[in-house]
Image (cartoon, rainbow, N blue to C red; front, side, top):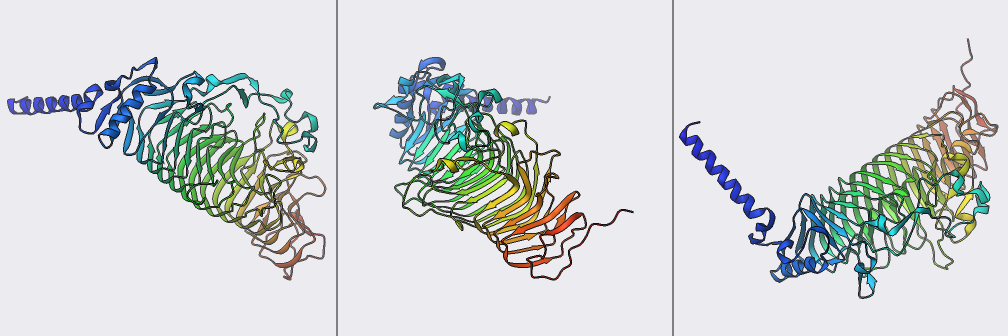
Length: 559
């Protein structure tokens, strides 16, 4: 190495060491705008309670009109910490903010507060490669499984008193709990919030709560909760506007991402929410939209993988608030039946409108919702249920491939519809035959490019690939499917009390007995361009209710 190159190498090395000294570890406190929690009494030994020290660092940051609070590597046991405007909490790699295991350490003014929270703050950020640990399992009875808390009556289920019986297994929880802390992270009436890159784990209840907030970016998070814990939702967004969630990996014991609209100071509209590029696992729904007294509108969910969940996508109206203008694109879903008291029965997609409580108020609607490019494998079918006809309207399924699997829990949990929460117990969980896609009471249903496939030897409570009853304005275009088995009365499509329907460009799959059964169909339109050569019977009964004169094709005779 020449002398000139050696000198330049030494200069670069010395400069790098100076930078590390300035911006790393304790010396970072000397950098303009940076405050190190170690300089305010924090002790990273995992046992010292750091609540006061961390709050002191935040106060110092507020005093200097904002800045970044550095949390170096180490374990910081703490109670609730309130963040303030213009404060960035940066957790360096190896830093763990760990909730105290003592419930009294979480009470402020007599009530439990979230671990990290802010109210009416602006420009607040939590970021870095560190971890926030809620220690939720320390507040649980992990050896006690929660049974029916009274939100359904087992006499209405297919299994009767044996429904939820521990004899069918308890491995999926949910477990019971003693008094537990509040949320892990919570932002109330805040603006310009960022949460990025951190790991959030073992929340005792909701992991992130965004309430009445505006302009929020959540990106790059890992939420790793114990899935046995009830109510530990991943990201719960209530009555917020302009929220963007992306590039996150969530494992939760309740809804992974939940978008609702409750009463709020801002007038109560939740709108302009996007969720993209996330993987989600949940004992309840991967994505839940609704319910509440106010609207949720203008939302996009795309590029998602939902796995090992009790439900995939769920849209719920139980009060006055409507859900409208919502897109679901490019989503892979794998759901299954779970043991224990969880809401949902393995549906990949669920839409329902019915009253949650006795009330004279008019229910809202689910309308203008489009599902595009969905691959779903599940142990139950897609459900659309409008208790009052027409409160689900203008729903489109475009490019859906659904495969129904046999479930080891079919006899003990299957063959029921789960519409909780419901005011009337007979509509909470109740015995009902199922279909690949079951639609009750909707006005405006379009299926285009939909395929339904089955495992062999499905339970006898599955009857049809597509079943519409009490539904108006149905378009079936480029549908492929067959009945699940060979039981008499099954068909690829059942239309029951349907007004205004057309079927075109569709195909009976190999093994179809009857392609389309109908009763009470009125105002039927075209039945055209369909390939029914693999169906033993095209339409039953005859004469066909359709207006078009297309002949019903017979199967190709065997040579």
